[in-house]
Length: 371
Image (cartoon, rainbow, N blue to C red; front, side):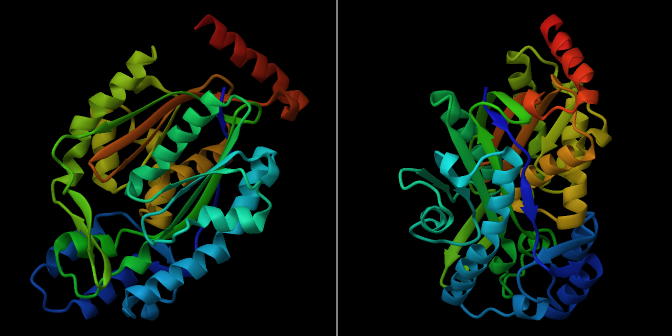
């Protein structure tokens, strides 16, 4: 069964705090009628700090779309390899073992995809499949996990590398004064993440079922307007309310698998904003603390788009690994409005068990057999 192994995540060295965000917004957008509302919304995000690839004064400038995209290429090639190497090590594999690379990003454009550069520079085989995903936005992290699951189901001995590179700060548009645009300026952060899905072996989430769902007629609720100045993020005020129609979809996925969505052991949920997490907690009947890994990502990094689910999963690994057989769900949400979801159980590679964990491992297996 495909195993989603421990992700590797890195954030850039430049930090902007909530207080700095509010200060810069008041200075750059002074006098704009939407500013007071935007400032209140930014304060309510709960984002304490974010990390960006350039110093803030450079971020606030707009040197043109061509230069922005050049920076994206330079920064992605500088930052991705270290994260990939750690993800491979976490999974106990090397570049030559990888059969497909799924690269997700909605904040820059390269053709050929960065997958080609990775293959040429990091020792991946020339016959490695390339699967770039560019237009699912924040949902792409969940989609990448599900497509890796599909690949490893079709090729049971295959291994898939997932890479997410989201440099959201490169999409800042100083002339955009709408509430949705101003809110995004205080919500999104930059990050690079990677994880391996192994067809067999490894420790992590044994992926058992995945699903996708698109809320009808919401395709313009989250979108890019592509103009001469680049990508202009557009956010409809109805987006925070989308958990009400999506919660039943998550419930159905779990029910079809014989599980109760309100009684799982872990929840890895896209942290699009505080209301997303609060509403999903309410509609699923799950205590707010069950989403603590997603809350931590939002608080410490902001919304890092497709990398959120990988960062939240990393936190699950580092908090205290669940016992074998523990059940969980992974869900990403993004443009469409699209939900990309997967359910699975915690699995431990027996070859990596320490003697003191052998009993717990066996107890977890027994619990699974009798469930």
